[in-house]
Image 1: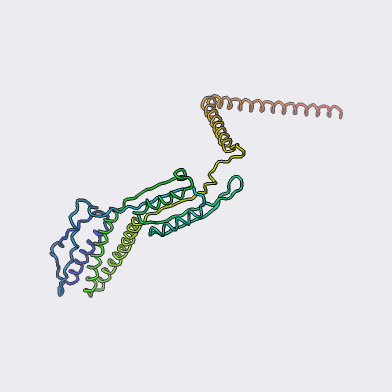
Image 2: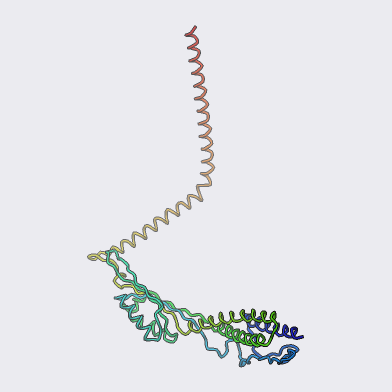
Length: 320
């Protein structure tokens, strides 16, 4: 009787943990175990099932939950001094309560063998200060608004994911507590091992969910901002005594592209209009040439045989 009652309790807890692991929405209203009420008897001890706390009434899954949005932004800016701009961005991240994720510095060589430094940096700042950080970096531009070469801003709403994960975590922790009590109040080795295996699995799920929830909270609290600084001097057009070879190069490239397009257009027209007639003609010419060569080869072989017979006849007459 004791083992049978214990197995019933384990089955109920397995059902609770399975519901906690399901990704669908779970009702948090307290329920009674069928046939047991709020407690069940296990021979010489009584275990009172703890009911999960009821959630406040909601009009929707995310009602009452502050929106969690993961924001990501990027800027590409031309500046007078790329290294100084990167250092000022590092200081800006610290001032706003953020931090530097990574920074890079590399060099570009221009047409006249002048080397320019190019830098990039990724910072994280509080989400409410993201626009302030972007505006401060825009001010570093050497050419005002024209110095902003590119700018992007995107956001990902993860509120629903956060609410679902939090609900599943609460249910898993409730199941963990029930399993702990069961394992402490049973002397049956087989049942204890079964509870222990289920408890280990639930704790693994709890760790994964806690890490995921922490990631969502930190990512939404601190936005990512990627910035690339380009030396303004490297973007200036080439000019020598009023002559701008860059314009000539551009026109030459355009002419090259147009010529290439004309050649491709001609090949397409030729293939569509002429090949259907040229292929059969080419096959006929091939077999004709082959037949002529074969005929000439036979003629030469026959002539060689005749000449050889004549030589033999002459030699025979001379011997006689």
